[in-house]
Amino acid sequence: MKIVKVGAEVSIKRDIDTGTEQQREAVEAIIAQVKEQGDQALFELTKKFDGAELTSLRVTEEELEGAYAKIDEELISALREAMVNIKDFHERQKRQSWMTTKEDGTILGQKVTPLNSVGVYVPGGKAAYPSSIMMNVIPAQVAGVERIVMVSPAGADGMLPASVLVTAKELGVKEIYKVGGAQAVAALAFGTDSIQSVDKITGPGNIYVALAKRAVFGTVDIDMIAGPSEIVVLADKTANSRYIAADLLSQAEHDEQASAVLVTTSQELAEQVAKEVQEQLTTLPKREIAGSSIRDYGVIYVARDFVEAVDVVNQLAPEHLEILTEEPMNVIGRIRHAGAIFVGPYSSEPVGDYFAGPNHVLPTNGTARFSSPLNVDDFTKKSSIISYSKQAMEENGRKISALARLEGLEAHARAIDIRLEEK
Ligand SMILES: NC(=O)c1ccc[n+]([C@@H]2O[C@H](COP(=O)([O-])OP(=O)(O)OC[C@H]3O[C@@H](n4cnc5c(N)ncnc54)[C@H](O)[C@@H]3O)[C@@H](O)[C@H]2O)c1
Ligand SMILES: N[C@H](CO)Cc1c[nH]c[nH+]1
Ligand SMILES: [Zn+2]
Picture (cartoon, rainbow, N blue to C red):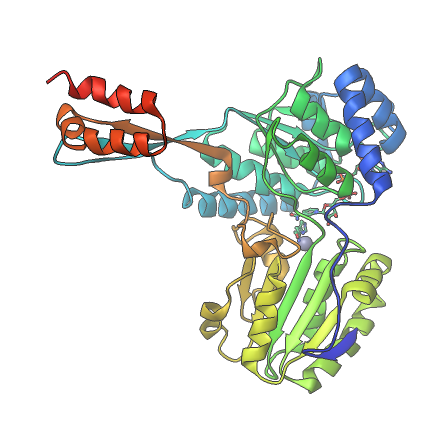
């Protein structure tokens, strides 16, 4: 891993926003094909990209039930416990509708309404992600979304992985389709004979999924573009270099374009971590992917002091930040930008990926500067409520029509005046 002094020119900027021209063209063509040919396109593209020859897309009850035989009881109970934690955390985010009244009889309020329908994309190309099902479906359920549709690419055997099926069944997801990539996103946005369109599409995916989500935004809403994973560890000389190396690799193994960064005030720790990362890499099953990520997007920054180190973290605005310092709680207040903050030596990032409760769908690529983890609000919308009394109209009407005339909007002004003339 590169060790550099803060201030040295190092770019870990990844070309993960727009994809290549070829990828953009491929996605455009897929969307057009799905719009034109509907289900037929979904079957053809599933054969082409996933190697599965399907005759129907919807997962059957038998497939869901059958999956249980392939998953250990112990795993099922771990999944159930994670579900309880995730649900409990998201229940706390739930907002109530509210109203407020004024002395003149005015009533103002905000009505919170769950979305009617949501499509959840569950990635399935390089790995199966039961955890991402929980992180998308549970907040939708807590929000009260009536129709939750799940899509995920089939394997060459025409099936979804048993872990995915069991997780969906445990959560009570009823509508599941074996289709992935840009074609799944297009089907959710525009509808086909088999798949009725939805109002919003959420969930992570590769560049094809991300580009398709961008392209259909406007026809439907989307949550965010959650790109390849990132981790930044902020550590001082008291931190454990073995823990840090393991945590950096935990995100590097997701993707060649994942990014793992250590920011420290200790040159000695920097050297230990660089060595540890190389050692731990050698025994990792996904060492090809993790090694490539560490080589291309892994950096250790050595800062002159803690102020400089915190500054680097805020500039990176990482998806995940771990604070491994002597007094980690005292550091939280100085962090302005991070999707999720893991505090202290036992809050390893995978605790959040799977189990603690907060959502693991987080802003990536610096977007933590302005956006938040996936949450219950993402599955609701709000309507403002305005009820004016006669008294309120009489007291404020002239001001309102004056403001309307300031904008040259006479019809607006007269809509008010007509009521004032009544008295
Ligand atoms: N941020 C998060 O919360 C989170 C969680 C889990 C996974 N992820 C990320 O999601 C991504 C998952 O990617 P994945 O590939 O494993 O699964 P995926 O389901 O996103 O993509 C697989 C699909 O991509 C399409 N595809 C593949 N090659 C194509 C090509 N040449 N042209 C057109 N379409 C093509 C196929 O339709 C295939 O079914 C990874 O980057 C991972 O890091 C993020
Ligand atoms: N770390 C990923 C988000 O960046 C989420 C995930 C799913 N499974 C394991 N990890
Ligand atoms: Zn992860």
